[in-house]
Length: 443
Image (tube, rainbow, N blue to C red; front, side, top):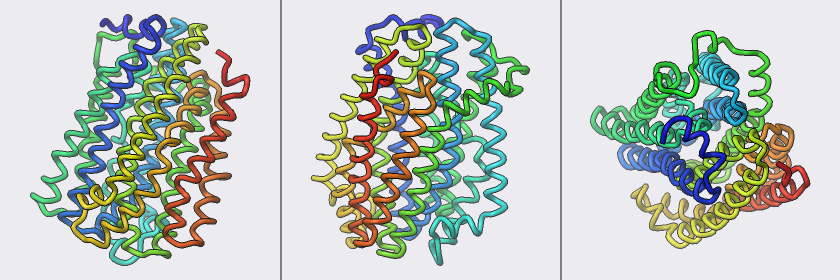
């Protein structure tokens, strides 16, 4: 399929077939990262130890924060880009892409410098103390140095309908990370530093692929010229407004992770932190198909909204939500039934495996609802409506998930585990209510 045909198909191909084709590719893409999360946990836990795995998980919110900046710029830029392509405005598409690229590079560099300067208090804030703090600091430092490489802008690639290249932008870097992890961790005996170097190595590959796609490739719908890399303030405001809910959601997930680590350190110590590290990696892997469905839906909704085809946009969103819910039910059943077997793969310590299995059985109840808030937010973002998406992102974090975590932590570690499915279920009800409003069904 030619470059113009790939974009045009977003507005002409049957929605079900288009969503299926796109979902297979996006899910394959993001699932490779889920596989990396699992292999990374496996190598760290088996060859360095459970405490090291807890350290990596404690430092993980830094990676989430950098990712939040990347997805904010990506989601906002992709929304502007797909609508511009739907309207046939290639000059605006080039400016939106250039503004997105430059904005991320500037913000990520600033974030990396600030993180390095304030590394000690930052690690303490993340909930790391004692032995856990030493490894967390070593891991975090390398991630912060490599922060500028943390995205290849696959969301912008998808906005052009280039699902194949977007898939490669996930698979090739993640395979690189999977190969580098044992080389650095086992071969060079670098411990958690090796895990961080493997992550940054894969990011470098992703960044290089994005650089080539947007700035060096000549067979394109539009060209990103040097002047397009000077941020357009008008477009930047629009990108920031549309992408803000994504940032809030990413920041909220980061805050929740930090709060969870701090509460677990108090209620269950290193054992609970190690159990959560395993459960969190499993949860990341399980959530990948739901994220893939969301990513597949976005360019279809954005393009058709820009082209005035609200019926196709709404059909794509409705179908995506149904599939996400059904997948979540199946995933929850599998993980709950095989929790102890799964946990045993990642640790040879029976106490850690038992604690992780207990966490998994409870947290798995959240899986059916896990994709609904993100899909609803993406539905609004893709059409350029920032406010409903922002309300959803802020409301579910501040009014539902964080209060549930703080209240249920009073009942100990098990209460913390229960905060996950309860918070997710209530958040999904809020998303469903917002979706049912008149604006949710309008094109």
